[in-house]
Amino acid sequence: MNKFLTLALSASALAFAVAPAASASAQETFAVTVKYGDLNIASPEGAKILYQRITKGAEQGCGDQPEFRDLAAHGVWRSCVKDAVDHAVRRLDAPMVTALNGGRGSVAPIQLAQAR
Image 1 (cartoon, rainbow, N blue to C red):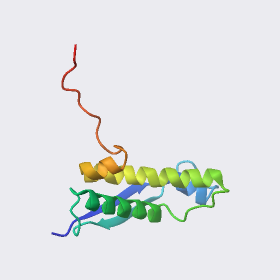
Image 2 (cartoon, rainbow, N blue to C red):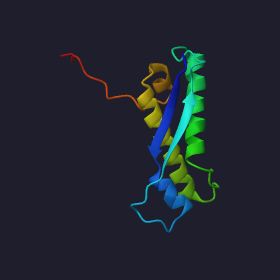
Image 3 (cartoon, one colour):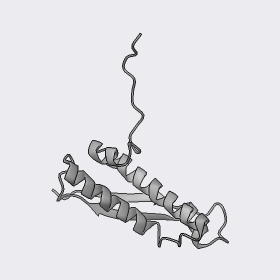
Image 4 (spheres, helix red, strand yellow):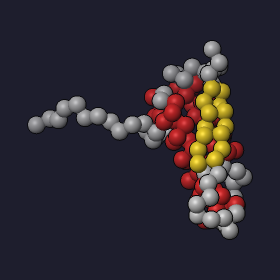
């Protein structure tokens, strides 16, 4: 089976880092395909490899990493990467990958009962 995940996110904040003169309403989007048909994402090893691929794809989609000296641009880039990874993990809906993402990307837990 050929499995793949496409990251498609809005990276409007990145547009400001790359082109500060851009208007606040400008939006840039990107799509990155991450293949995972060769992985067992229910295993810790497979989930880790897929999470690394998702992160790498997000970094590529968000553009070149700014220098650390440019704190504002670097913060915008990190935010773009985080948002892209969170979005991809949410779309994937794989518990092991969600756990690697610190639980971000999962839906809020449902409370079934409360102890008295």
